[in-house]
Length: 318
Image (cartoon, rainbow, N blue to C red; front, top):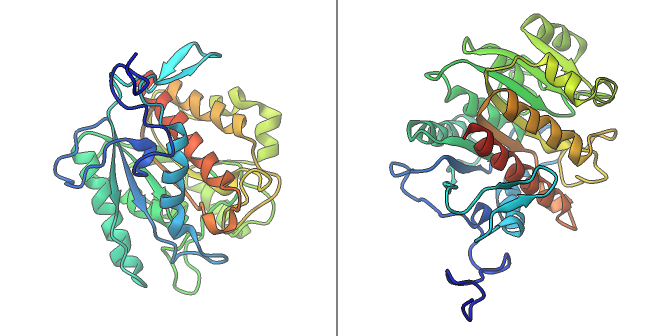
């Protein structure tokens, strides 16, 4: 063992160095993406109807993710007896943030869509860190020339508003916009609970347009395996995770907290099941607002969920 702690070089502890996602390499040239997974920040929060602040989400989640920068060893899970994200075969890059044009939803969303398209053109899986949930709209737009996708939403809110006061591209609209796409074959909306931003007619529209809606309590009654049985198998999944799907006791740093939410392992087991029964081709995680998160627990939770999801995506794809 060398004086630096490893034969291969520096120890490179989590608090050392630059805060790219997981301390993976930064790729500035979007025409030179060579990876299995590419992380893109989407620091846009002009779509909020309540507390803003999710524009700082990508920065907060990146910093928290350095805790899980596994370095030389990968991430060994003793329950699964699997080393996830092995250093010798894991190709993950961070391509930075889409440029956000203040006050312009249209231009900002276009820049996010462009970033996702460049990732897809490179043959990588896009993992987008928001930002409010409206950033899902340009993410889904970018899949228009891909094979069909089934959208799995993990969230407290249905986000199926068609239009309200002329607004069609805020954070209450993304699942409605997704359902309108010909290449979106259906939606599984999981965790929806309590008073939602979507009225009753929105729920009726969602079911009519191919959505299966389950609350946290319904998931617990069915069990994770029962929920997975309701989601089509052997298809391409796009997963969108709103951090407010988790209970605010563990995820207070968000704009619209909703009590009665998930705990960590419920979501992890659901995500692992999806990786086993289909192919995850895109991910976004949204609504982390670090300024409401004095202990950084929400950012840490978001980073941990993403690292574990990416590890399982890559392992089960191999």
